[in-house]
Length: 209
Image (cartoon, rainbow, N blue to C red):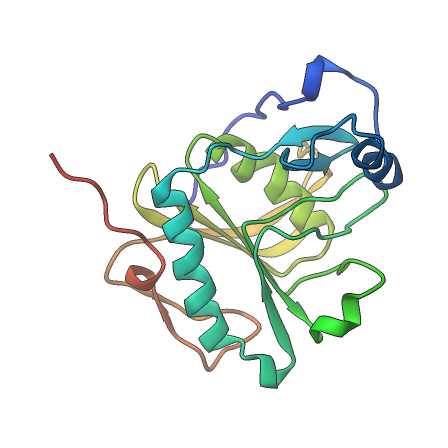
């Protein structure tokens, strides 16, 4: 079972404790306060920088997840597989998950970001503690039924299911089921019980030597 670690320190721009909204974040980009190349998430009203520069293993894992999930959640069945695009979970929460499976078509989100997902994936190395604790609690609070972490540190796939109220978590919610899948094993997504995804199809090859 996946071990949930202690709450990490937030990666907040300038150490500012002020809480921001999605509208304020957009205005900061418009005003040039934030550079267009800066990839900033809004987590609990705090500005959190995405892990940059992105390492090749991280990019490879995202591509592998997208390919595998597009097969399991095809567009013709009413799904979109997004990559590092906003999920508008609340006025103070705008994460950019590495991969998210949302219901709908591309044009459905021409005027507003998706507000829910059936599956969210984060590829984790330097941000593993943040993804296991704060983001897991956020996604559970938002009612996302399944959350995966591609754990590059240990070369495993962590799977979180059954969101529920859990005391002591940042958003008051967590996942009651937490499991770790190894290479050679396979996963069946909650939202697509007929699909089988091999863990080997999600993990990049590990460096040797």
